[in-house]
Length: 62
Image (tube, rainbow, N blue to C red):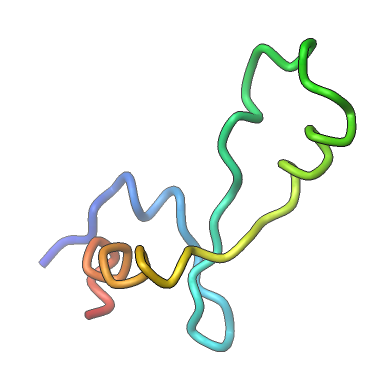
């Protein structure tokens, strides 16, 4: 089965098997957002435990 192209572009697997993602709200209309907020949105984070199964299915890891 093929992986979902949208998921393939948005998620990466870490060495320990966790799923990494980018933050939303960092693409446009940045003038009204504070520097602190924009900097926090720059860093990657992990997919929440509740969403992990759905993402794994989209990536065909499960």
